[in-house]
Image 1 (cartoon, rainbow over the protein chains, first blue to last red):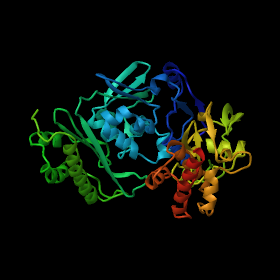
Image 2: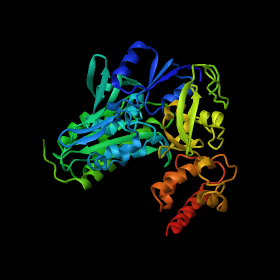
Image 3: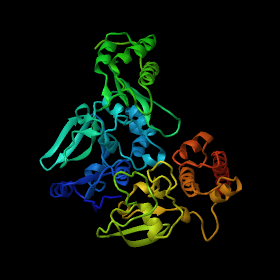
Image 4: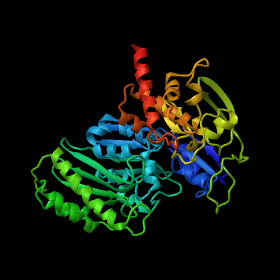
Length: 290
Length: 179
């Protein structure tokens, strides 16, 4: 490791933000499963490491009826996967949390770290998109709240500035009867990056939301597809239709290491069909136009 | 951590001190309180191997992929190559050296030997820690659950089957001992 850094672990947000203000070239550490790798390979060189795991705001994992769910930046992915209320209310998030990396990695990796690293294939990004997640970002000027689509700005790029700390993500509350699913296709059954990750949500008012990970430079919410779905009657016959329709809204790049463009398009279709049929089975079969 | 320059992305097994001011570190390792000074750039794995001379956890890939450096930290299995030593401040750590008691191997270790769950032995400490944690969470796992529980630990020798057998027979023996 070429980086020669010092390590600071503040116990309050104020101390952390002050440290950020006074020390340029600081990297923020929560789970560290991405950062340590970059440091080791000298892809990142920094002078200071700010460990946010003791900041109280980042340790919150709480569901409040009527308000929704807040996941702090220090919460490891496995804690999300183990939480019964999340499994019940936000099933797609649990499925994604269950499939990220290996069990060992999930014990350290954080959900917020996963979106801050902003890899196109971040597993947790697609479920967060269908739940209209918001990212809470703190700086010395206060806390700003960003919608998740505005948070991702490119491959491994986010809207977070040098002097800011992401405190966590919040998801609005869901009504009874709201269900969702996360499906992914990887090269192997064990732990692997996904070729396509698809999150689909069926709301209580029978609207379908769809989001994709690993297909484009940033995770994508397919709002146009959702609009055309809204004009259709929700029944199992929609399966073949969505299998073809979703391909119109996908633009995977050529020359990817993990899979060809054609394969991604095909898999996207297969997952969309599978997801829709499973959601219909879970939810009601009669579609009420919103 | 090595001192390779930017062009060389190869990892090597030599730890190089950064000469940053060392910081105090206190933690419990295998039931014993440890007070040491640690270099801020040192990983927990480096710390265990170089400072505490606990050579059980191995550096395989150094990237959290292979599981050879698995230890149990505050009740959860983690890859110690991806953790800074200073992050472990105040934590409670168990390494493979802490599995045996009074010089006697634990049931899990005995079953690994009995079922030939190891050949070269490089992955074994990590495997044992993942298996120990799995059995603590789930004393009666199915074959699928064992596979899932050990999914982050690679073995290039055994083909995994003897390891799975060892974990299942250890689970059975441990349940019988509890009766």
